[in-house]
Length: 471
Image (tube, rainbow, N blue to C red; front, side):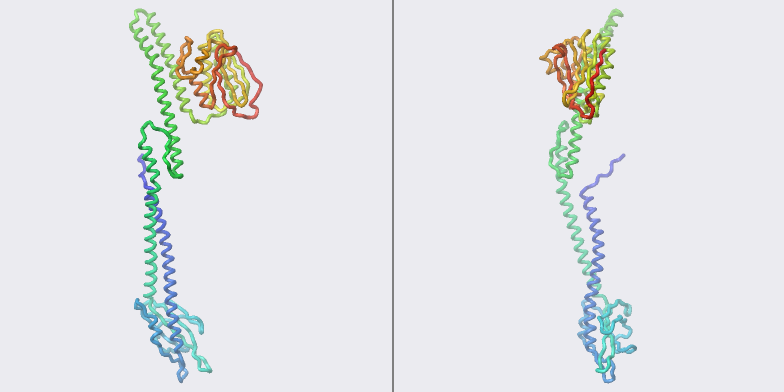
């Protein structure tokens, strides 16, 4: 499957910002348009109402009691504008009487003696803003009502509205461009730590898997921690692979050479007995190589299990059952194998690996102690620790050689075949679960005691009477 097209954080942030600003800007422009119309209308209304009031103040009654009015030039001049709007007026007397002006000019509904009334209408095909004011002229005895109406086309008002809107749109555009520039610069500066992180990783040698120490923002620390964890696990895997291949190359060379030698001898044998003898020796060498490979694979599994959370294991019952499985082999070798232990004792360990460690200890004891010896698997509690020991009264290991007995490929002086991996495997498994291996002389100073000590997983009822089992 093809990988998705890579995206730019800078471009994505900029796109989100511009889209959001455009949407909010459009809403702001709609509101600005309405506000500009309201302001322009209020300004036009103020001028119209002032003009109508000036005309109304000039109204009087003639000798016949009719409304007489002289339209002052200044009243209409104040409506002139750069937009060359046209101005219209009309004065109406009592109902049905037209005094002067445009008879077909629309009239707003004004209340007698009240504030001017305003309306938007059409006059001769043009939109106009109309202001009407209702007053009365007094004769001393009676009052004669009249209405003054002044109207103006809306060119100036529309031009003012558009000017306000254009200025607002220009300011919004400048704000968007400025915000885009700021985002571009801010993202560029903010991404520099990531660029330095990439350069720090790219310039490393292929075998440098140490943690990345490049300073990064807090938002990226989780990513760096994940990278460091991955590199740590990769280093463990590579170390395990190197150990396995190195140890396999070192340890399998000898048995393979023996196999080739015995095959050559079998090929040159002059009798069937000589060929069979060479085949037996080759078979022994192959079995030895199989044991080496099994131990090396176990070591690789120990390396791979590093860092995994172990489960809860009841040690006494586990050791008793494993000891019972080795009783037939011990009896065949003429060895008295037994178990003594207290339980239940719970520890944190992986049963399969710990079983391999105990199997190694018991198998080594059966292999190296000799017929007539006594081998005991003992489980006990010591304070907050659980102990499991394999003791024998065989030839043991010289006290001076005990410190390096847990080193890989360190072999004892026994004539029995071995590869020097048994105790090192046990030590590594014990350390994997937070334990330790202690080597001491066996009971009475004879033989060897290999003790594994683990921290207890404390729980109610972890101490109980001991049980014993002997072959």
